Length: 371
Ligand SMILES: *Cc1c(COP(=O)(O)O)cnc(C)c1O
Image 1: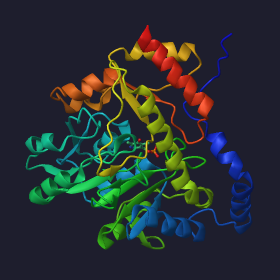
Image 2 (image 1 turned 60 degrees about the horizontal axis):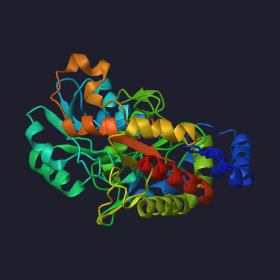
Image 3 (image 1 turned 90 degrees about the vertical axis):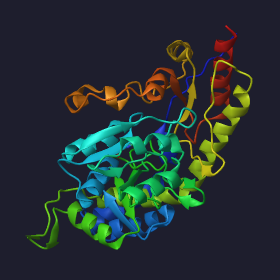
């Protein structure tokens, strides 16, 4: 008789419950302090979080999305400007460009690592181009050296979207420390997940850090005196305290993700109809997602779902095909992003995935390709 188990894509409770006592203690500390906005909890977390990104400055943010928005605002990007970004990414990357009044210019991706293809960027640069936003998709940094070199040559800013790659490295340098800004998300599904929305903006540039710090709080430099028009982009003291409990475990979470990824790589060798993710040797891939590729994607997803295994498609619609951006187009075709949108599938790779669960995924995938 076949015993089947349900395998979730992610189970945040398995991560948070072992820390219940410490998280509760952090909650009580904030509760009793009465300081819910700004203050010591935020500052303490920012200092610890800057160390992971290897940057001089880290500014707590209300979300990863707001971190991108504030980075664009701090760089003075607005109407008439263009910003180059990948199309195969989460919506926020391009959504924020439009929110500041600028125009997203979509670049195609590398077929192997899914990240923005540096070779495709230069032809997209115009006199209106102000910045490039490479996204470190699924936990593997984009090829930053050629991107930074291009940016220097054309006097463009670089904002690294580190939402899925906080703690990863490119040629020995932490993701987020290479461009002018790095934007981090602590959405619960990210490698470091808050108990709600939270984010971080990191930079080594003192002037940009100062501007971002003001923008986070309505541009207020002295109480009721506003130098800039900012917004409320603050990180809650409560989330900062809870994140402070989880941050010391990030390395162990990442190691567990990598172990699962390597197990999948070994198990899927020899399956010709399935492409496993490519990890470049000069990068530390931290596997926020383990994403495979197959032309029989939809069929495989259904096959796994029928066996109790949940998977996800990141992303089914590339951003240059999104309805809301249509008035900004027409956008040229991006054949690799479009092909990948039809063929990618992310398998469960969360740190607490159990060996029996991973075995169930592997067996089911193998069975599918035998049929
Ligand atoms: C999650 C994510 C964001 C947005 O982060 P939030 O904290 O959810 O606002 C931005 N970009 C990418 C690539 C993401 O994966």
